[in-house]
Length: 227
Image (cartoon, rainbow, N blue to C red):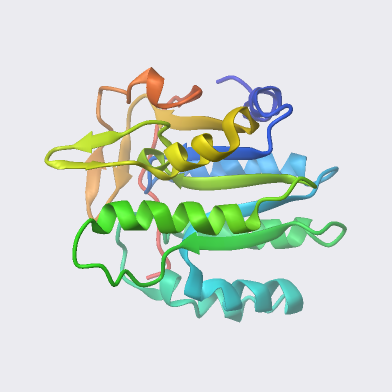
C-alpha cells in the first residue's frame, strides 16, 4: 500500500482545512490516522477535530492538561455500548497518542459533534449545520485544521440516502472556504467493519465526485471497544 504519510502531505499542501472521511468501525483507519500524526506532529502543530459530542470537550481538555487518562476512560462516549464504531478503542488510543506527541507543541483536539438535537424535523440537516459551525469556530489561519468525520459528512455536494437528502458538512465548508479546503476519503477495498453489528465492506466505492481524493486501504477488520 502507498505510504499514507507521503500521500497526505502532498494533498494538503496550501490547504487550511483537511477533511478526512472514514468508514466508522474499522481498526485500520484510526491506526492509519495515528501513524500519520506520529510523523506530522514531530515538526508541526495543528487543530484536530473528532466526531465526538461537544459536551465531552471538558474531559479532553482535562486530560491534555493533566495527563490523567481517567478523564478519557470516564467519558460517556467511550463507556457507552458499541454503536456506529466512532467510540472504538482505536480512537481512544488515537487521542492518547496525540497527547504523548503533544508535549512540545500546541496541538489541540476538539469535539465537534452536536451534543443535543432539539429539532423536530430535518434532524440530519441540522446536525450537519451544527458540526460545520463548530469547525468554523475553530479554524484560523495560523495552522491546519484536520477534521475526521464519517465519509458522508465530508461530501462536497448534496447527498441522498434512500428517502433522506441533505447538504453535508463538506458542502458548507467548501462554500465558505473554497480551495482552502481539501476532502480525502479513506475507503477499504474489502473486509469487515462494525456499525451496530459486524458488516461487510460494500463492494462499490462512493462516487469519485463526492471527494477531492480517495485513498484505498487493502483490507478492513472490525474495531474493538472498551466494553
